[in-house]
Amino acid sequence: MTNECSNSENLFPAYNQHEVVEKLETGFKKLNDKFINLLEENQRIKQHNKNLQEENQEISRNNLESNKKYQEISRNNSNLISINNDLKKNKKKEIQRLEVISQNLEKNLKILEVDEIDINTINVFKENNKQTNCNINKNPTTALNYSKGLDDIRIVVGLDFGVTYSEFAYCHVIDENMHTNDNWPWGVTGQFRTNTVLRYDDEFNNVLYWGARALKNKKHNSEPVKLFNLYLDDLPDNLKPKLPIDYKKAITDYLREIRMFIKEKICHLDGFDYFEDVLLILTIPAGYSEMDKVIMRQCVYNADLIKDRDSEKLQFTTKYGKNENIRLIASVFGFVGIILVNFHNPKCILSPLDYCQRISNYETCVAIYITLRVLFTLLIVFADIMQVYFCFALFSYYEKLYEKNNRSGRLISNDGNDEVSAPTYGAVSDQSIA
Image 1 (spheres, helix red, strand yellow):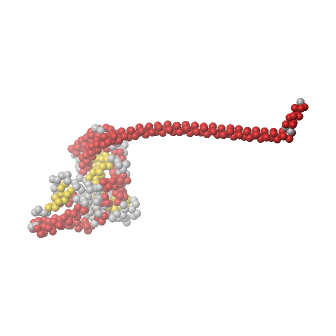
Image 2 (cartoon, helix red, strand yellow):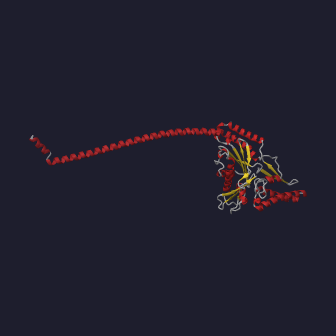
């Protein structure tokens, strides 16, 4: 035993034993640190793996949702293609249906031009309504789109919005009563039309008076605003009146004022809804362009006469007997005449005086004047005394008409009456008020 102890002491001297223990401790610590690092690295790898799995699951879910959306889009696309094909198939039928409605409306609108209505007129109106309903019922699929459309109209209002005068009438569809308005604001009664005139405040912001009252009241400094409808006609700028405001504002303001008056006249029905129950027929000259119609529709919408700008509750109609599409032909075979041939009725021949009362375009009047002047010059050379006398009489009539309009700065009204002369019925002119 003593020998073995002595041998171990020889192998590990005392000063070496302490150093060996330190080396072992150091090596153990290093190994322990590496082990801890490996554990942490392993933990990070596990966490990263878990995150990747979650991302993979999220991507799988998104991919599944994308597939579902793609399938839905494909179905919608197929439906849209099918609907488009159906629309193409029904396009011709829809156009024919609208043409039928338009024709029946034009027939019914003629009632608004009759001062007195008889039983025959009522029967025609009922027959047109039945025919319209019958034609619509032939296409029930399309009729569903008009659940509260033209079939359910309770009142038809006809508004003649003229350059110098305006008037309106309305008809109850159910009881078939037609009323032509002859009672205007501010105690003006017994007149079927009123002046298309506005009087604003000094800043031209608010309307103070409209109609005949706007010409009577001269206490305010602002001048009456009138003839603003001429801006929608194809006239040169030098023939259009100078307005202190934009002509669209004037049109809108006048329509707004007359709209409030119309509503007072017809809103007494039970459950009455103006925007749903009223069909507004607005007369316009046949010479209006498509842009003029768009502007007029926008003004009507801004005046709250219709709920939607493209509402079918507003229908335009040209003025019967005015602004026809005509051709002027001058003839010098033994007499001076003006032959007006209607494009739709070649047999319709009017005398010069008839035509003078039907024209509503200032340029047309000037063209007649110039034509007659040329014909008069030719007839002095080639015609006999009777021809010259007839030409001189006709030429003098148009020359006085032209000079009077040129001197007063006014145009022929759209209903064939000179604005300077007194109206034929129930209207107040500038001359009578002054």
